[in-house]
Amino acid sequence: MGRLFGTDGVRGVANADLTAEMALGLSVAAAHVLAEAGTFEGHRPTAVVGRDPRASGEFLEAAVVAGLASAGVDVLRVGVLPTPAVAFLTGALGADLGVMLSASHNAMPDNGIKFFARGGHKLADELEDRIESVYEEHRTGAPWERPTGAGVGRVREYGEGFDRYVEHLLGALPNRLDGLKVVLDEAHGAAARVSPEAFQRAGAEVVTIGAEPDGLNINDGCGSTHLDKIKAAVVEHGADLGIAHDGDADRCLAVDHTGAEVDGDQILAVLALAMRERSALRAETVVATVMSNLGFKLAMEREGIRLVQTAVGDRYVLEEMKEHGFALGGEQSGHVIILDHATTGDGTLTGLLLAARVAESGRALRELASVMERLPQVLINVPDVDRTRVGTSAELSAAVADAERELGATGRVLLRPSGTEPLVRVMVEAADIEQARSVAGRLADAVKSALG
Image (cartoon, rainbow, N blue to C red; front, side, top):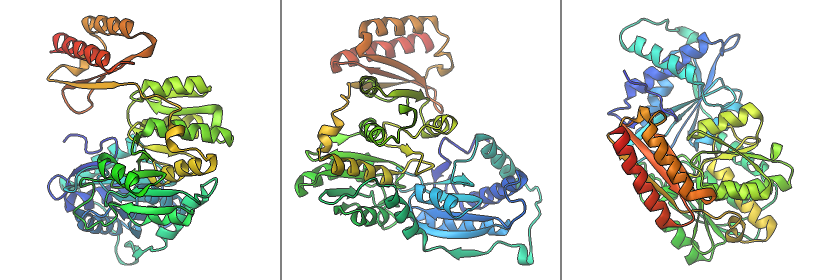
């Protein structure tokens, strides 16, 4: 069996790849593994379970709750809430485990299961591996001790989760949003109620789109992966800015008053300067991945802020932040982690803090985001090659060296093997888009020649 857990939980087509039986089995396995690790020692265990509005989340939630309760874990069902809300409530309620059912920005037929450890942090890789192993043992018939009588888990609704999370968001704001007009695109997802409530209570005038989830329309032509609607809405309503979430609202992208996109790198740059002014940017350092635009790196250097870069994936950003105590990190895709207030990317929190910077500074988002210039970036996927030899091919190393000499200090080359497919990603940045395309094309040919 291939590894079930990816970089962000277990995902697949609901009721095909990700079945009720799998959801139940993984939940039982998670309970047993955490019990083995001593997490439940000395007390009756509790889990927080939430989901996004996908239709399949209804039966998958039922399966997860059944699995946990059958393993002796009490369950607090918080209903439809963003992923970061489930992480927050897991920590705030002192729960031993959190479970979120969502496939984030994926299309509606997909769904996923993500587990959080005590405190609302992502499970360590070794725990995920152990959960897979125990799940497979049970699936193939290995017996397990089942509690009976008063030992079974109890299930109750926790409707207070909504207000408690909104209050948490508002408590993180350095100032109110009075006088701002904001368009929110909720992707017909998990933040459809939470995000407008938080922005309104913070003082903003709010226009919402994509805020009518019906279980089938999540991410459908809206949200952070489809920005055309919010760009038009911001201009139509004369708004100061727009905030677009994905299905589980663990990330956001923004739109300025002209309808121009403000991506995750620009959001990070704006928040880094704002946090430094408030002495909240610990070690004057921001963490980002190697896929961040070179323009972001150059802007941080110019502003005297240190940039630490990690492998692609918000979990690697978070690991670096936790290890060294950094306060801010994120990805170009809009996953932004503010570690003083969240244990994972939080799109609503990010949007609120971005709007707070606009309100506090009296400057337009377009002006704030101009602190960095996005250099043209070209990405080419080269399929059917031996990705394992990217770092050892002399021919490819020579081609990369030639490209880097041509680009100089105003360009960048990145060759990255895919983690799941037999392909290599070629990324080139340059001050001129035509130069970026030319260099990327030559490097793609070199990858085919050297690794094909």
